[in-house]
Figure (cartoon, rainbow, N blue to C red):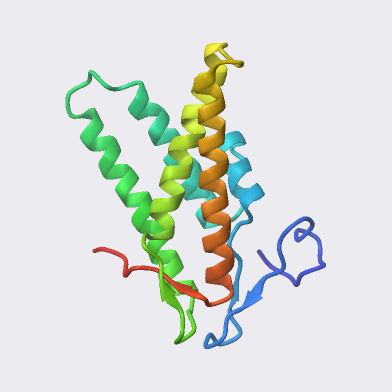
Length: 169
């Protein structure tokens, strides 16, 4: 993304955060709504975290339809781990926590992977036609919970209040 906040292309986006300790580096984590649109609708825009989140959602979908194919689950899980690692590496490069920041119990990539799994489950149930069932209610509630977890962590990270575990590999 080029340009400054307020310019074309920034409409509806959270203002970028100047991260203390970075040399004029702008950190823009997607909002909960942007991440929701990426995993539910494929509208990931130009944000690397949203692109990875959409890929994770697609992999969860493939995983749900590949339960009986030998080797496929391992391949899918390996690909998922790659996207989680990509998100975590991006976060490690871009987020500079304050010295007083607390360590998060999990990585942002893992949180987004859970959100993608919840999105896939919710849309699969919706497509099944049982839109009023108890399972449908639970699936959408789980998606909302995962989105709130992401939102709280992303906000805390943007403010420098949280640090994430070191990326693996």
